[in-house]
Structures are given as structure tokens and as C-alpha cells.
Length: 399
Image (cartoon, rainbow, N blue to C red; front, top):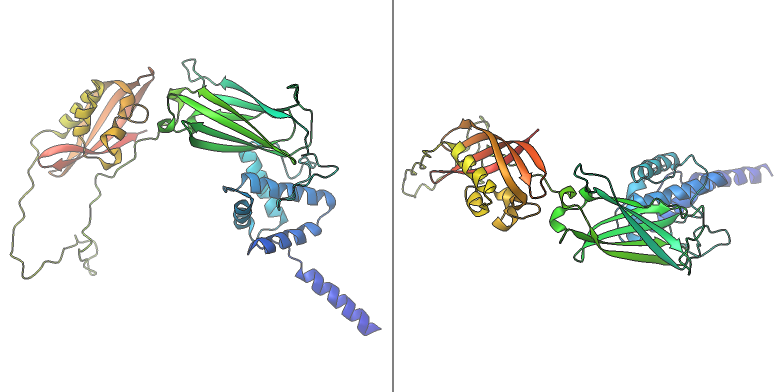
């Protein structure tokens, strides 16, 4: 009898020991099994909050398309983590995305299941009965000139008569997609817990100016209930072009020296200038000395700024040899390039440093764009000697 009791206790200990207390994301099966093990050790309320946390992380904590890829991405995110760590991570993601959810608050999202069980249950708060989705948009913010800096986009689930549907305690996945001329610019997600949902605040500064056509965007909002996904679009919404995202000119190190891949390095003196091996059979030749520029490098910068001011962008582009500016079409782009400049008012230009092959010039000037917005700039221009002429090779905006 004692032997039987001992074996029974031992088997129970072994069973308990096999249950995992952390996520095993080796594959989808081990992911689900380990999460089930972790859930079973929690109280009923904690189980619900843990499932909500997993849903928050799967929906907002990873970037992936489709349930399968989202699960894989979620597995990588939480692999090896225990329940407290997952709850803390979900709190961080909820706060970052402006979602009114906390691991310490009462259950609020209905019944969540990250493994795709969408069948309606008797108490499923996400089984919202609605006829369609409506969208209200409103410009918000002020750029200082009376123009908006964002659009507030508020979706509402409505009945057949167009009246808002009343519901609470849901966790409906709401998705905003932004397009211009058929090209998707961005996607955002949030949780719609009731029909007082605040919606999305679409900041113009998050939209790349170069991808917006005719200063207009299109939006599509979808809200997923248990039984159906509702969608609604609005076409041709105006944006404030001066508030759109314009990337800063890339920084180029004009002092960087290109090294010949065939050059040999003296291991006893690694700081010495590498030498390139020569063919012993080749005739000895003395390379011609590069033509020395006769003009002050600041004259090139002055010509560049003068050409931009007069909107002679072809002449401005010809003063440069800067790969970061790309083609002339990119350089003169009216939205993201120098084509957006109306005039330039130069305050000061000084040559900072110069040698026969490179130079540095500092310039202080005001730039007014075609919307009338003026910006004061302090710029360091890097220049290089190209066949005896100074060409702008880098452009750095200083604080």
C-alpha cells in the first residue's frame, strides 16, 4: 500500500514538473501547449487578463500580415518569458499605442483567444450586432499659420437606420489604412471597446511628403467583430503639405578616404597609409598631379545658394557632386527636394578649412518654402576638387 502511494505521489510530481512555466515558441504546437500550461496555473481572473495580454501583444506588439505570421512573430517576442514578464510587456505595448488597457485592471476585452477561435459564445462581448460602419473626420492641431497638423478619424458601428450601436466590454480590432493615389502609406491599429471609441489621430508628420499626390489622401477603416468585419473608406481628404514628413538631407562624411581593396597594410604599422601592389613588369609612370582649384570654395556655395534662390535648380545641381542628393529629379522635387524652396536669404558664408583636394564651408541663411514658412539654417558644406573645380559633396544641417 505504501509503495502504491509513493508511486501515485511520484507520478503527480512528474506531471507537475512537465508543465511549463515559460513560453516555448519552438513551433505553433509548443507555443499553444506552453501557454495552456501557464494559463492553467492561474486563477480565473488572471487567466482572462493573461489572454488579454497575449491578444494585445499579437495585435499591436508585432508587425506581420495574417494570423499565422502574427503567431510566429508573437512567439519570437515572448519566447522564454514567464507570465509576469508577458503582462509587463503588454502594459508597455498598450501604453505606447494609446490603448486603455492595463494588466492590473479588471477584465475588459471580452473573450480573447490568440489561436483563432472566433466562434460566438453566449457571453462573447465581441459579438456586436451592427449593420455597417460610419466614419467622421475632423482636422485638428495648428501649425502656427492656422492650418491643421492632423486628422481625427472616428469610426462608429451603426444599425440599419444609421444610429450608433450600444455595446461595452468588447475588444474589437480597429485598423486604419492610409493611401494616396492607390499607394499604401501607413497602417495603424487600436482597440474599440465601446461605441465611444476616440478613434485615430493621424498626424501629418507621420506621412511621407514625397508619396502624397495632389496633397490628398484616402483612408479605409475596418472593425472586426466576431461574426463580421465592417469596412468604410473616405476618399480625397486634404492634408497640410507643410506639415508632412520631409526627411532631413542625409549626412555625408566628406573627409572619408576611399581605400583601394587591393591595398596592403603594414601589420607592424597599421596606421600607415596602405600601399597598392604594383605589377613589376608594368612600366613605371608618375601620375599627373591633380589640377588645383584657383577659386575660393565659398564661391561655389554662394553660387549654389544664389541659384536655389532664383529657382535655377539646374545651375544649383551642377555645382554639386553629392551622391546623397541623387538624380536631378530627386534634387529638384517640389515636395521633398530643393524645388520646395521659394527664396534664400544668405546671412554669412565662411571657408572653414581647405586643402588641394577638399574643403569645408559654413553658411548661415534663411529658407522660405512655397507655403511661406521660413526656417533659419546653419549648414556645413563639404566640397571636393573635381578637375580643378570645387563641387559640393556633402551637406550637414547643424543644430
